[in-house]
Length: 118
Length: 497
Image (tube, rainbow over all chains, first blue to last red):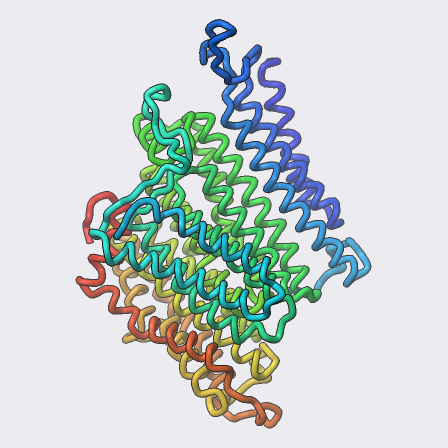
């Protein structure tokens, strides 16, 4: 039971993010929803590699034999860095858009922005 | 002189062009020149790979020399770039369209400020698309999808008016969701197979019985790539985003971006990695049928020329997906051929609508009429594109739709074949609305003073129109053996066609 708990919480976090994207009317809250969902995915990526009591994946002759079995998988950690940077770019772009939209409409409410319908 | 070391240039040259364009922004014409040169180089390189290698030859290069090692049981550790028949087919299409769009943009973008920003984003988008096509690594594909997507969000907002910003925000939110789902699917695949390389993943998955996890991954990938390809339940962003961008970018988005990011990736992953399971075939057929119908029927009601063309893109992507969903060699060939034709005529029509907007300042077809007299080149080329889209016999679009419908009949999907034929009749109806209201008929008084567009824009229109007229020649055995059949063989395994 306890072993699955982090995954369940990660799923809950992802669902909170998706819920915010789908139901909120405020642009900033939608952006926050995307950030939350994105962080849930990043967290999941790290948890895939996690191993209880695992070591860093460094082979060193001086400190005795460390077998690959006790090492943490290093690849997802490299991937999650890339993913965070991409998330930064997307977030920065969307916040810039939010500022420009606020300048045009004077509001963050998407239901009042209705240039594009039909 | 072919060697594998040239494959990374497909990404490196547009990327270098993007940064140089930003660096030399003060020198007025340098960014334009860089935009044209980088896309010209990529196109020549892809032609080179088609003409100078044996058809169907496949090349692979390990980035940074990180290949396979005995310690990891022969699995590939680093990123492997792969160039096979399907990749080279897509590269040729993407870079051909990019080349003529960049030449068109030299004339068109004179009205905008910040042209260097346009070329920087344009080349970043091109680098992202080329990267998606040549990569053989799941996570790397996600990264390139994001490069191309973020550049395209910014390009949609390029006009910074109310409409553009709103469309871009909608596009960014839905595109961001799609990317998250794709990343989640990649993580699940990594967790279950322990590799990110597509070739290794295929070997590991082919030996096992599919578990529930793999079906979850199918769902995530179909939703994510369906959002990128604008298949119908996921299409809401496209009719806003594509018309809002400047015309050259509309042509790139509708002509090649949705195909490189959505259609290519679906075909590559489901055919090449998963071996095209039966369930996916059914889902693709259903999505294709809905897309064809909804896109065509909504296009009938549109008065905004670019919006009409955007809905038509949804419908035509449905045809491409129908061909892939049938899954026979003939169906896949029809899908790839229609993909080629759609890139040509849809980018041509978007460029022509941009030319009309350039001269008349409007996109509303009610305010146009008789433009053929004042703009013979734009009118004539748009007519060629429209005929190809409508599927009138000697034009290329007819042959590809015919191949898809014949493939559907052969595979005993009679209802789908009938539905596709019916929708192509509706396509004819909305296409003739464009030609009738915009280009034929009486010239409105208000438009008496308009002029034909500048030379560079006309050249691009004429070349793309020639591609629409002569595109049917791809089916000739000599050309097909070199260009189309290797791509089909990559997806289907045996060379049936």
